[in-house]
Amino acid sequence: MKWRQETYRAVLQRGDVDIGAVYPPVGRGHLWRWRIWVTASGHPSAGREANQTKARQHVEGRFQAFLDAAQLAPMGGDA
Image (tube, rainbow, N blue to C red):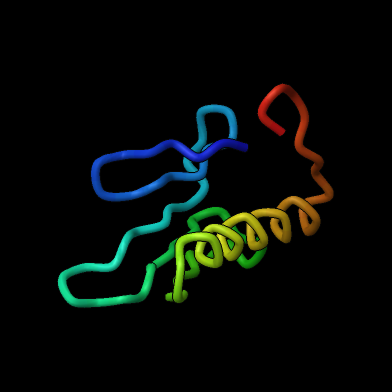
């Protein structure tokens, strides 16, 4: 897995698939928003955290839960 930095967000990518993203605080806000599209439930999930590291951990953790539920394991150079 790797994080790809875009203009207004960081996107978690596995191979050619976008898994989720982390968005910086907007305006006077202090919370980082996160969103993941590939989940064990099949429904997108989103939330807010105090910093970028915690937001990224949510996205990575929920993707790992998807892999576990699907009985898949990451392979390759960016695993």
